Length: 261
Image (cartoon, rainbow, N blue to C red; front, side, top):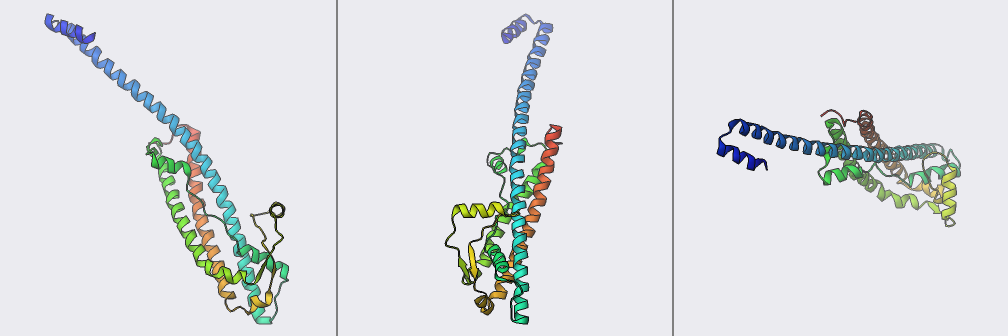
């Protein structure tokens, strides 16, 4: 319609009407673009809010897992150090300083491990679908990238650390007796009754004489202790990154603006 009127005005050389029609045309196009941009921006802000909520859930779970894993590795390190002290005392005095039950508790500890912090599922989704740009805060994007990089490296390092102690596992098990009477209900009752990090006692006896006579005992315990310490350090760095992400997510959620551009 407007183009037909514009053509008619051109024929009539009605320059005033032509100018008015042209302004109306440009204004209509401009307003249309603005409305479209506003709708896109509004949709982006909805997606941003959804991503922030999901990322917050992911990182709260990751932080909780890292807290549990750190506590488990700290418990393992304490056990390995105590067993090293026991072994040193045995070599000096010819007898173990603690009873079998106490040593068996620590030996059960060092035969199990925990998992490192995983990647955030929502961040992986945003990467794969090129949605990171929806987050307006560059600080948040950088923090997410930093954690993800460390999570990937942490998983690789965890596998390397596991391989480092794996050759010593048969040497530990050679001195332990597996509890063949274990059931799921017994394990559940044990783990529920014990405070602190999750643990399960799979072994109910240890041959302390053979443990003392094994020439690899000191190396085996030292390797486990150093490995647990390395895992604690990795988890500590991951928790630093996790807490940084959670702080920025809280900041973005609080102001409702997605951060500064």
